Length: 270
Figure 1 (tube, helix red, strand yellow):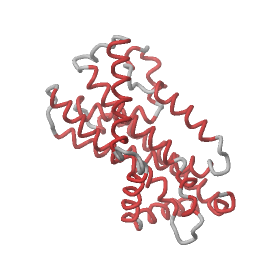
Figure 2 (cartoon, rainbow, N blue to C red):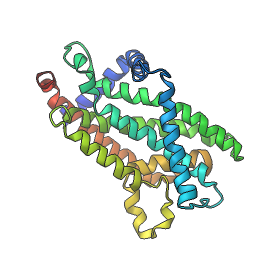
Figure 3 (cartoon, rainbow, N blue to C red):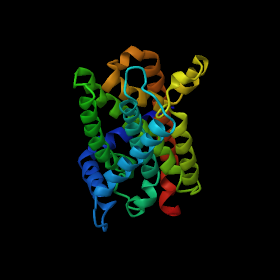
């Protein structure tokens, strides 16, 4: 137990030490993802925007989803889908970080534990653009900037921490079990429809709400809505906050254990 805690501390120390390298690599990764295409990084913004627009049209007009209380459906939906697109893209990308950067994994002097974060930060650049877009839409609907909007920094931090914890596990295991990438795709599909992103949790019996709240992504999605349109502080939902950070700490503990247990065999398999 004490040994794992020391490994967790070592992980955080390495990330802080290599913070400048982390930012540099993430920016290079962002540009490299679209290198060679005619429109370059534009595709990084077009694809999520098109996905978001299609979902909105289907649910708003196809399934005739109405406003959520006094909140316009498009605004309520955007808060959820923007959070989810960042999470799903980060998991898909960061889970393959050790495979994609195998040439760095084989270098003894390189701290490869920052590689999942490199991918997460790379996805965050696009996410920041959509947060700006969401802010504009909020203003257009009469939801003007207020102190609650600052809370989005907290929920973004929550997203990054739990994403790093989860992808540290996935990226370590996927080297030895390549079929895990297919399992991750299935889990993300289940996560998309199992999280109240395009549907309202109040449409289900109240007795089932407890099970939906066990999903940590629920906390982040609702947090985005609380920040932009709900005007609710995260400490007002102290039970969910304690549960989220307890689960995140467990995932980070597991990630540190799995990573340090398998790290020495990475180069041999790759």
